[in-house]
Structure formats: structure tokens, C-alpha cells
Length: 202
View 1 (cartoon, rainbow, N blue to C red):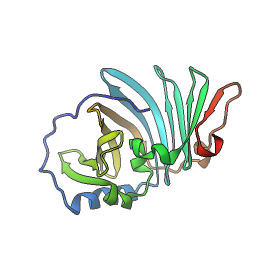
View 2 (cartoon, helix red, strand yellow):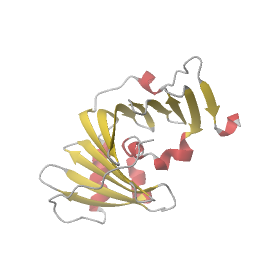
View 3 (cartoon, rainbow, N blue to C red):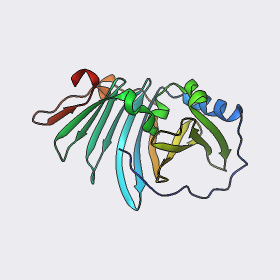
């Protein structure tokens, strides 16, 4: 969904902080975000993907990716709808089956659960605070996540898959302003093929 990429940039930073302080810092920042909107630019192996996303707690988001891969992806908190505009196809899955593999849900989930699911490290440079999250359960698709904050808002998300492929996503025009709830309701377009992989539809 959000692809593979460039490596972490070298930064001038203070030493890593572990233990209770690091997750406390991150949980405090995430608890201050109920809704989030931003444009994004994703770099993956020299390729660039741009788009916009909207997030709302709990577990709701909308991502509109532009060319070269034109997709709209919506989570209503229960189901995940992926509309491939070029293929005129919609795939529906249960969110719980893929939630751990969607790094953006870090901002729309339940922050207190981070203590049980990730080991968290923290460091800072002159401009940003950086958090590195390593899943306690290493069986998933994501091997690590790094998120950088300027003040109370995220500016960059870097994640590495279990296959050591990295993705860098930079955020622009970041806002925590209210979002219309209709943004997280998928409206099925006419004439598209629908593949419904939810348990009740099989």
C-alpha cells in the first residue's frame, strides 16, 4: 500500500533514550492527536508517490494516492476498502487482519497499546523528535517504524519491512483540525468489480 524506499537519513542527535521515558513521550504526543490531515510524498527505491491522507481515532483513515498508482484506501474502523482507479476494482478486507501492517494507523490507534506491541526508543536533533518502534512480535510484515515530530505534529514516517526494504514518507501542510466523518465512509462507484474478502462474505 505505502511502498518500499530510501534508508534513514543521517542525523545529528542526542543519545537514544529507552525504558519508560521513550514510550511515555510518544504516547503523550499521540494522545494529543484525535484527527490528522496532511499531504504526503513517499520515496521508494527512487520512485515518488504523492497524495493526501485523513485520519481519525479510532482506526479510521482515508488515503488518496495520485499517479503513478491511483488508489483510494478507506478504513471505517472495521473494514478496509481499497479502490484501484486504474483497474476499476475494489477489494474489501477486515481491518483487524491487516492493521498491524499499516504504519499510518500509529496515529489513529490506541496509544496506550504501544507499550504491549512495540519497544520504543527516542532521540532528538535541533529540529525534530524521533521515535523508533520495533514490534515485539516479529512475525508481521513491518520490521520497524520511525516517526519524527516537530512540536506536537508528525513530519515524517519511515518504516522498514521484514525483508529490510525501507520507505520514507514526508508530511506537508499537517493539520489536527476536525474532519467530516463522511470522509471515512466508502461510497461504492458504479461499474467497478468488487472482491469482498471479509469473513461474512466468503
